[in-house]
Amino acid sequence: MTDKVSLRKLDLADMPAAAAVHRASFNERLPTLAGLHTPEEDVGFWRAVVFKDCQIWGAEEGGRLVGVIAFLEDWIDQLYVLPEAQGRGIGSRLLDIAKSTYPVLSLWTFKRNEPSRRFYEKHGFFAVDESDGAGNEEKEPDVLYKWEARLHRM
Image (cartoon, rainbow, N blue to C red; front, side):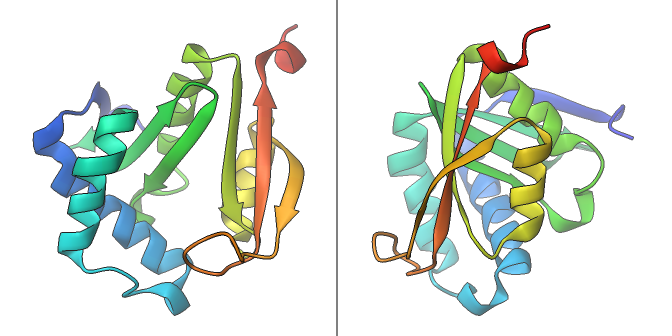
């Protein structure tokens, strides 16, 4: 259950923990891409790029960051939950923050990351485009997803 998990907006001092959640989740899902960046590079990216451009929210449990979402208008830039904390609704709660903030959201996820794709599809996202990966750093084929609040109103 997620009753012991609290959500809060993160600040610059939280970026090393956010980067660590990102790396742990990324490496678990895509082990062939592990080591693409050093932990220092990850923290630098979260501080200089993600924090500057996005609203960042975190999920904490027992004083430890277990999930993170970074988003801006119409776009989810990052969403990661520690592997051991997945499947407990934490990602859904983080996603709901972005959904309650913007009526349209898009994001890219890697084509072979089936658990991620199932998660987004379960939450009302639909595929609108695919790429061969030539345009991303990892050179991994990916899928562009979109969500629109107007399609999910009762």
